[in-house]
Length: 126
Ligand SMILES: [Zn+2]
Image (tube, rainbow, N blue to C red; front, side):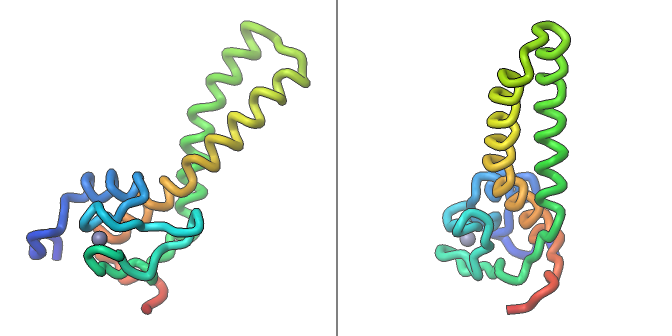
């Protein structure tokens, strides 16, 4: 149960730590390696993470955030500046791809922290 472990942080703290790619429990060890692969366990506190599967939740959250960030920017640019299509693509595509690649591991960390905070069993045991 939450609250029985004195070293267990609050859910917002765990989410913040894992959004930075750190262990939700201790905030020291890494949560992901090789970009999106969950570590089997934290190298500092030993908390197991390998059995958590975020599945499509991380891409869903990434699309949600990237869409809400980029669509208003694109609409404002299109309405006010009417850029040529080549210039628009040269600006929008790197923006969207860059934001997606930047946010995807953070969103995966957030989803893993939510699973961890809920003490979900995970779909695969180690
Ligand atoms: Zn840890």
